[in-house]
Length: 311
Image (cartoon, rainbow, N blue to C red; front, side):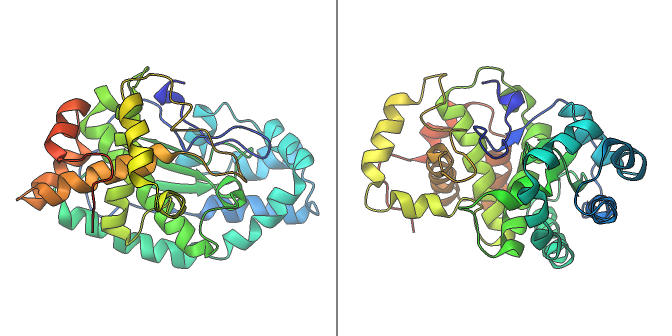
């Protein structure tokens, strides 16, 4: 699968985390804007229709009045008001259940403001780009590119194995996604590679996990460490054997809404963490992690090996 088409599917669809689309860079600025108004706009339409909105009000009262981030989200995912109406009809429980996630958005936005400000402090050259939380057609969970992050509330809310604390879930996942914005800015050749190896894709995702942890306090895929506990050397020995493969299916983008996958995120995180711990200049190391352009050289410099103990 092209890394430029990473995506998370809705119920009964195979998933991956992020779709990446090329976009013009944005200029460095202050702490990024975090937009959540599209969610309230959607649920105003949804509630007015008793949970069964049709195409016309979705288009007229939601899409037409939506933010630039919403419009980009729809454009990149070829989403229409009809597609949303069809998704609501097919999976009504997903949209009804997503209201519980809507309730945590104001506080999650405050925490994200702090996390993204910390990134700007750790890396003053980091570029600001907006984050938009909206409602889509059940997939993907997120799009991240050089222009910013766009997240589907209903899709992120539906994943069963992420944080039960919904506020935490949004904070950690969006911190991960925002690291992808920096990667897209610094190393587009790697980030947009149409045929990445297992090592390359795992370093992109794992580095986003590591940077997300540095700025928000925890990784978004915390369950993977628990799944790997006691089997670290075995898992990473298999990873090392597969690192040059371009078939990612054993390591990445192989989860569903109810079944976790993506062990490559965990291995990539551990490689990035080893790189950071071995570096004398931590600020420069963070920049190199986000701007990784040569996966093999990065791996060699990290000092990582299968089963390496990392505090």
